[in-house]
Length: 409
Image (cartoon, rainbow, N blue to C red; front, side, top):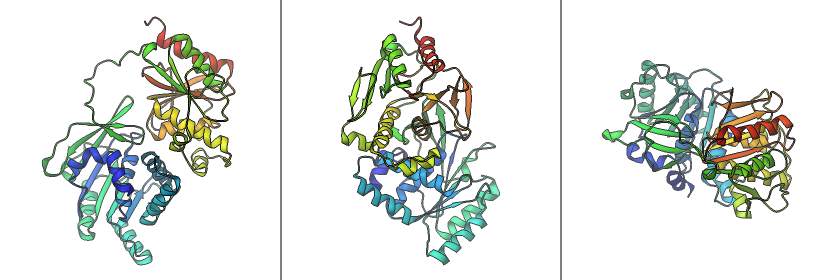
């Protein structure tokens, strides 16, 4: 039921020619890229396609804990299947849980013998025999890959490995080899080795849930200069930061789309876009999941749920996200605004946060916050943030638009 939709909407649709129907027993596939590009997300897509067909999968993660990996599955699944009814989504996710085992090694790179022992323990204790193993963080050395292939052949497993290269990758060591290359607001998937010599042009992946798009890569050259009249601000029109973004947009002739819903009070009504119940449901998310991501509690109140659903639309429509708030020690951003930041990070959107306490802009580079000075260089942007906007925060928003559009017709 859900499995074919995952293939149709996810990146597997675009690489089926290279996969020839997927990895076969005894085969090894590689996904490699620099840190923060989305290797883990692509692994989850590959695992979900099997899980939603009822096939057992073992997910081995070197970094992070079980909850973090499970959250990744829930986030990507929800993005792909938001049109499903809540009960249908819940039943499908339950099926995923039943057919999946997550094992985290807490920083220890697993060897083939470790995975072999784990597989035997799962078979003895749970009668669990996976057909696919995904390994997030494998050390891709020649001896490790040789031992892993022997294990895959002996146990009849298909194995996907994701890693950050520390030396040139030898594609010959794999049956399928995929490289993820970030370029501004998108990620390009390069198939360096497919089955039977199949060659594919680079595939553009939409950073929101990694949905493949049939477009050719740009030819290069300097970034496109964005004119105010060609730019759209997606926001919520609430008092504070969102109102300030809207006021700046109106001064410079930038179009506004301000998402709202029944019971939501807007300080700005220019470009108001009321969300229907069906549209709100597209951004449905577990508050327990949000609480885990942001490491703080959220109750089950209707208003906070709808605010989070609205943020889903704001961030999803944008290429670049600009937020005003405060970055905490754990890297999250305070308040409900923090959910827009987490969405942007999960979907690999370009992301800037103006920290009112530090008085500066910070860009998320995939691993950490790096200080910088942004301009608006995309036609679709999201502007959101705290309701408690300080004078320095308002000045930062005004200066962002001034830097971008001053002197441009």
